[in-house]
Length: 390
Image (cartoon, rainbow, N blue to C red; front, side):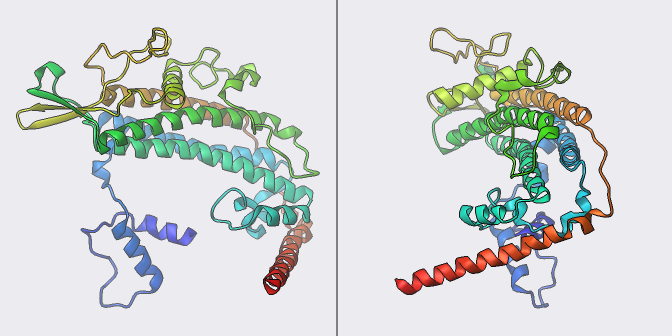
């Protein structure tokens, strides 16, 4: 799967309109043929058609996401250095089996829960327990990165339907028509995904901060459970004062952008969409057609304007999702970047190096392979016996 993904990424610029770079008269192996077939069949949006490339606010969002990705790479390093304070990680990682990371965490592993439990139980050691815990923490940082990657993709999808920069005010159109169809439902789905993923990043960022705070106290006599397992954004009060910085997720008074995202998220999750219909508006002006969705009114504190149970008031016909949502995402990502940078600075540790660690843990690593074979052999014999008795 890893090699396939690598080839797909290398080939990403191809679509049905492009010929293969491999000469047609040369025989190709099955793998290369499969990669080319997948590239032809999968959906493709050229770079120049992506919202984060052609729109000014979109470009700002792209730059923020790029900076966030770089900071998350550094955050991976800080998590690693905080876990492996007494083991030279890079001296041993090349010999560690991939199931230590993937089993129970990724579809890259087909290992069952019962098999995983048996092999972990057979390798209850300081090193293995520390590695298991580290990979759980690493998955948490990966999850944070995925939230932001999804936001970029959903913005592009959203603005293949909505008009990014409207030229006309509503009073200037020749006709205004609203639709409730597949495209309008997709618009709602993309907005829901953007908001929910942004809000989710608040929970995950809080988990990472709480986990880093507790790492020095983790015991490795057994496979440790993460301290942050049941942590949400509502638990930021557990963070120390030095992390409760203004301009970050953890500010004592939540930033307006976060309040707005949370207000929309709560409405989507608990009460439905931003409108009881999945409605999109179309305006025509001569041969021009523009598409938009209205943005509801908010209070100064970032909550939706409400009266009793009614929370969606659209008194301003020029206040559109087209304009307001990218600005909200941009502000939110600015806060996210500041938060990740702060966490990285606060928990910075030097890399622990010891060239003797491979020799020290050699037998423990070899045991992983031996016990895997032993348990797999027992499982195969068990299955054979069951099948024979059927």
